[in-house]
Image (cartoon, rainbow, N blue to C red):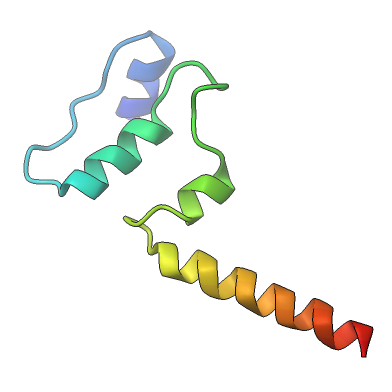
Length: 71
């Protein structure tokens, strides 16, 4: 909550040094002050920190369901 408060005040919240590069990138994408610069939920779900493969699996499943509906 404190990090979001800092973002609203145009301050950069501290990102822990021991966080992986992927984790730091994920947080930076989440904490952009300008909403147009901020990552969308879909983009964040596809981020490697969250498990980009999960997003790919969901997309693949969705495509399979659409194909089955056409049968």
